[in-house]
Length: 310
Picture 1 (spheres, rainbow, N blue to C red):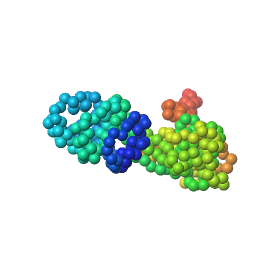
Picture 2 (picture 1 turned 30 degrees about the vertical axis):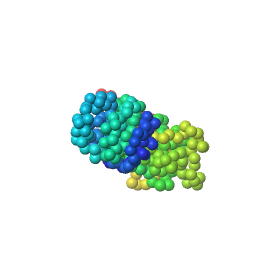
Picture 3 (picture 1 turned 60 degrees about the vertical axis):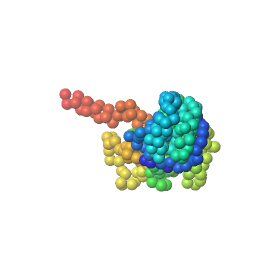
Picture 4 (picture 1 turned 120 degrees about the vertical axis):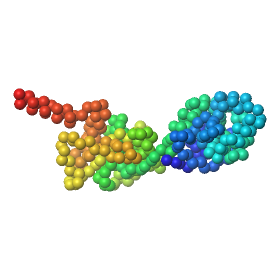
């Protein structure tokens, strides 16, 4: 996935983490395009230049060993159109000849106090978040017993009311109504809340509530990995009647090509849904650890039948 971002925005967002200092150059928009054969960021490469070129001590020592003619030849061989940012590691000064040439090619020059290896590692991590696939899903995203849980279901079924009950039981809100999910790994979805909605939840009859003000600072979490979907469905809805009482069928919901386990939660008067959600999470944790209560029960039944036959 390609993403467009201004260099100034990139600098403003991560300059503390990367210990950056703006050296020279005018801000402009760059297209971050992941390419396995030509990484977005890496050490200075004249043949296959990265979009962000890093100058560490090895590169600076090499440049220092060149005379003016060799330096000029090297600089003219680089396809500078592919590079947008030149960063020196460990706060080192960029050689004047390189700085002049890079500025003429509309590159931004930065300095970082970090060593080159760590600088590249951090940059790749932050840039991967910018270019990661993202989507918005309708529902309430919460942390329940340490697990990221998306509560989904049709409008008006009581997702926010269930979220309030879970909040009162000590669990934490991440996002109400429109959580955003980002694929940060082959099977990892990281969920967060749009900035405008952070800390708020809407409940019919009560309007918009400030969760942080009502339940305390620890009741709100900025983000969490999605591990389970609780799909609320009316028990009276014939399309969602659960015929398999032993729950031998594992259900999944595909979000950004990642399969997330789903538990269907039938909604009916008198059911304590918050307790059922907690139990569903506990059961999911057991499954993650290799234990399946249904399989255990079936084995016990088969063993008893076998004993009766004997």
